[in-house]
Length: 364
Ligand code: F6P
Image 1 (cartoon, rainbow, N blue to C red):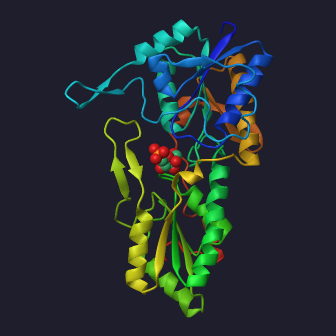
Image 2 (image 1 turned 45 degrees about the vertical axis):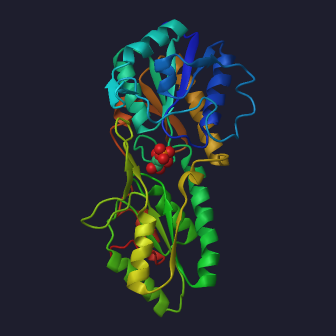
Image 3 (image 1 turned 120 degrees about the vertical axis):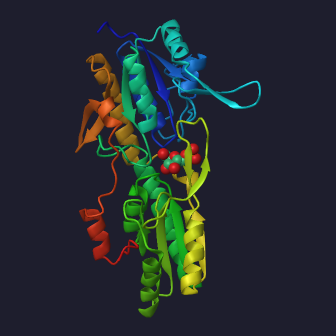
């Protein structure tokens, strides 16, 4: 591959703590090697519409601890299926990948570093297939990519969720209530499982273990019989009853990310009140899990990923994504990384450990 002189960096999908730490590491490492860095604005929107800025040393300074992304992001834009409003007000979809290609040529980019989750990286793979040299960096608070042991952002989300479980304990105990906490995670239960374990949740409901509300209720009543007048339920937004469906808040036409989950905490809270007679309250943690400063771990991982992405580029390892394996930064093909989601093993040792300390998963 020809020498790399100018690269683009883009953040796509939902934001997450640590994105700026990656951008900083990418930019500082690139500058140190004489490579110019262009920040593409608002994810793939900026690529299609030609919105970008040259990053300077000062852009890459003082952003290590900052939440969000200085570049902006979008989970709606896909150059291959670009949504637009037609003159009659209805939604249209068109292929704008050639506009993206034209902009990449006009800016003079030798390669693109794309930071995103499975949706953003699937589009990166398509760009690769039409000739764009790309390298990927995995990002998501959901931690649902099989190709990497961990994604940055997850640890920060987990610490927010665990603090919420801790805080709900004292109010639940004072009022003798059942408190139901809904956390994010999409189709994977990692945030619920680990915050539930770390915070001592009495019931944890995750998509990988369909629940029976009767069994959840029995677990709450059993606690009361033991003299425990309050309970904490941690529920993943994607949890569903056996034989039932997830609670979908909204479906968005034309979006690469069309299903918005949410609302299960309210459903469970009502059901618990009805079956147990115990006053219950729902808390939806929502985007608090994605906002704010990254934890030390996420800053550490994001910095190593940013450096690793430049290493991949300079070694000519195009089409690959950095990943964490044990303590080492390695790489995998983007096309393999986006096809395998990592979900909780219902029979694995994490779930077994939780069960052994008395946590109920709504299945027994
Ligand atoms: O994938 C990250 C995530 O935060 C999910 O956990 C959640 O379901 C979704 O994004 C929320 O997306 P939005 O910001 O579009 O509401």
